[in-house]
Length: 117
Ligand SMILES: Cc1cc2nc3c(=O)[nH]c(=O)nc-3n(C[C@H](O)[C@H](O)[C@H](O)COP(=O)(O)OP(=O)(O)OC[C@H]3O[C@@H](n4cnc5c(N)ncnc54)[C@H](O)[C@@H]3O)c2cc1C
Image (cartoon, rainbow, N blue to C red; front, side):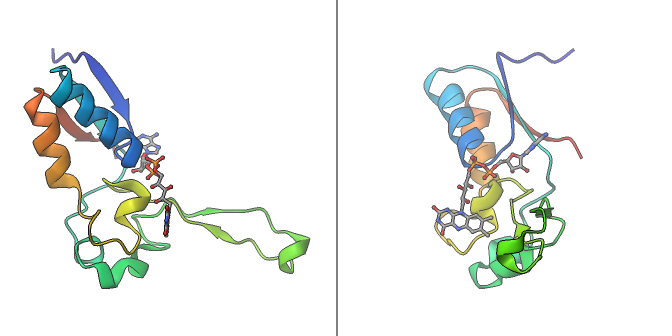
């Protein structure tokens, strides 16, 4: 049975940074679990296509409750569901894609990236 020193849930900015530090700096084995699928798709790889991630399978598709202050609308609360989290689904070419970096940094510490969905 596989075992790890540290298990981190969510490969967004925070989880990725934490995993990288634990693996590369402390030399621990790390399992980084991400609910979303691959970020190696044009909508993430190509900064100009960032908006195509909204309301897609790379978005948790949360919505606010309808509010009187916004004319009764239920506004979308986008949150990335993909390695890199919200940083992979917004227009920042220096931050996305992140999978290769996750794999590099985590593997240095005998870790792994796993998708649970
Ligand atoms: C469209 C958009 C535009 C943005 N623009 C800006 C901007 O211009 N400037 C700025 O500073 N910030 C911006 N942000 C916000 C920024 O992206 C977030 O603040 C940042 O990504 C938060 O990082 P995080 O690691 O806390 O969470 P997230 O990046 O949300 O990462 C959380 C990760 O955990 C995963 N996860 C959640 N639940 C589970 C579970 N149960 N099991 C496994 N995995 C799970 C998610 O899929 C996700 O990958 C933007 C966000 C979006 C969505």
